[in-house]
Image (cartoon, rainbow, N blue to C red; front, side):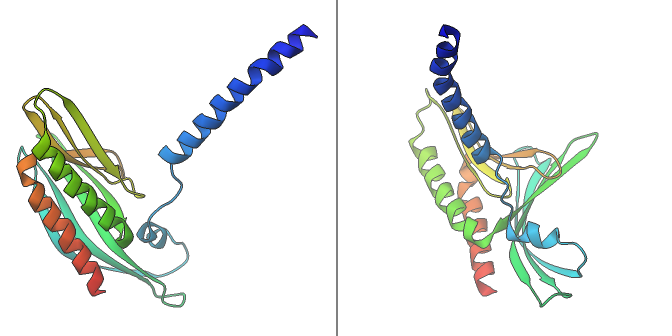
Length: 192
C-alpha cells in the first residue's frame, strides 16, 4: 500500500511536467502553415502562380542575400480560390556550394514583422556594449528575423527553414533598408 502512495504522490509533478512540455512542443512546432503554403500544397488541381520582385538586400560578406517577392496564386480548377503573400528567399553562396531556403509570409504577418523591426531598431540604438542581447521574431512559415549583440559585434539576421535552415546576417546600420522592404511588401499586398 505504501508503494502506491508514493506513485500517486509523485504522479502530480510528473503529470505537470508532461503537460508543460506538451504545451511547449505545441508552441515550438506549430502545425499551422501559411495560406500560400496550403494553396501551393493542394493536390489534384491546377494552380497558377505569378510573382513580382519587391526588394533584395545583400549581406555582410557579399556572399549572401535575401530576396522578397509578392506571390499570387489561384486555383483554376475549383472555384477560383486565391491566396497571396510574400516569399522570402535566403541565399548563401559559399565557394563550394550555394544554399537557398525560403519561407512564405501571409499579409497579416507583415505588420508583426514591421513592429518587431522597429523594436529591434530601438534595441540597436540602446545597446550597452557590455551586455549580450538576442531578440528574434518567428512567423507561421518559420521565417525568423532577429538581432544579436555582444560587445562590439552586432548583427541582424534572417533565417528560412525550407528545404533546410539557411541564415544570413546583415550589418545593424542597414535596419532602415530592411524596414523599407517590409513596408514595400505591405503596400504591394494592399494593392491586391
